Length: 124
Image (tube, rainbow, N blue to C red; front, side, top):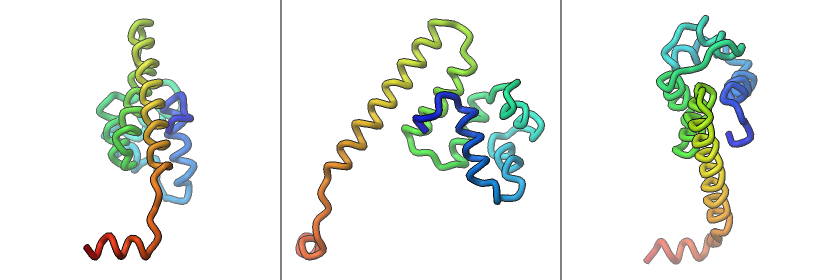
């Protein structure tokens, strides 16, 4: 999710990943709670999702908490018209990126016990 600076790029990626699913755009529009024609205008660039629409999509995709916050912040950023709000939202995205990297470093450092040690641990 972090490599997508615009939420619409992420939607296009998800559509491409699910190109074999019949009427995937219709499913996304339903998950967002909007008409398919409006959803098409969003994807093609002339409109933006509302936060409610974005929430529906995030839940449909099963995004975790950090991904959810990132996606919602990207939607807010796209809709923001003031420089102050845009600056705050960009800072929030940077914080989310940093927190995700910190978490992945912590998880990567954990050692997985071999089967024998696991059996000993769980038997006690």
